[in-house]
Image (cartoon, rainbow, N blue to C red; front, side, top):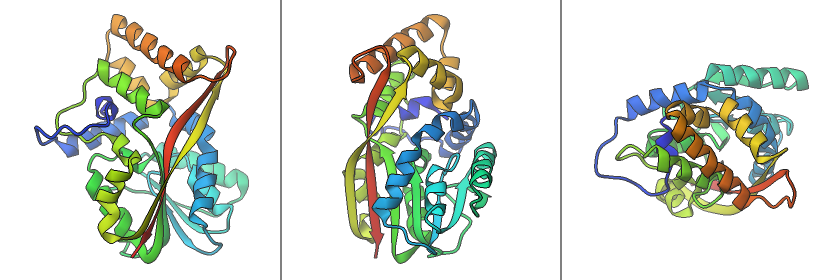
Length: 282
């Protein structure tokens, strides 16, 4: 993915970005490393989102940009009829492995969040945790979520906020790799104003609740090692920089970790704010 597109919560409108090229870079980014190593630690967010959505047994649920299937598994554990989608086949494979281990019946399908291969109003619930927020064409992705959701159905999202830990990590990266002109920051999906702008015209109600996911690692160095190795955006960021710039980025991110850390010892206990969003479609 274009790492710089994640960097700030502002919108740079001076030029029209090449969204097709951006999407290609994004897919390459999320295919690099092994996001599942990080993604598995976020499981609680999918569980909480399903509770916020009040999902019911037998409902048809679509997980968009599902990664390795956190929200997918959470819905399936509640006896929903779940379809899990992503445009990175390797992540879908990880989701299949997890589903098989838990003996959960889930449909896995490769799909682009900006062009979902499903009929209109096909699902009772459509959801995404830290996934659809990274699409190149935000408005198109939002439109697709609405299109495949039934009237009276719900859309549930968990999106990092601009001011939370991960939002600030991306801002720090942006100081070293400036964002391309015209690209909207994914962190906008973590703001009520942007959500209302994208979904408000077709929504009966929109509920936005700030939540926190707590990153727990052995030390700042351990966090850096895991994310530099397995988390595509950070892996690609370091790969794009010269050694001296890599050292500077490491120092800046480590300072960021230390600023948010509340462990009181050498461990990492870092709350990262995200927005939990429940949209009811008209």
